[in-house]
Image 1: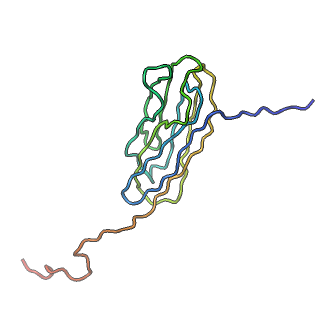
Image 2: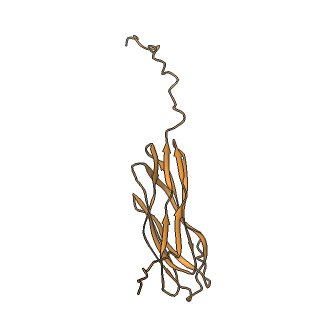
Length: 169
């Protein structure tokens, strides 16, 4: 008899877009999940905190109102070199939210010039409202920090001797 390998198919996606920062500007990246019958989910968005820094974090648009498919967020929380977030829905089995949702968003600012660097999405755990595990396929985007396009120079910076040079007291 032929053995058939077991293949675990993912039944949810978790992903981000790409951002490019320049100078002192900020950019927001959304961590999104595409899922059916969401009961719970937790995940961490990791990045190099020597290149970019968190300005703010915000919960996404998964339903939280007290309804059949309402739930509650824990976080998102800035942990330094990653942001963590969790969502729990106590709806009856089979009635959890289903859609492509913003799980959470993070606004970053640049700290140092960097070529395209991948975010990582780690410690992803999810379940349906009935308790069955959800296997998420992570697809992290990238962040790039470009050098500033302008450099401000003081008006008196012209390599000439300043007018006050040689003054005596």
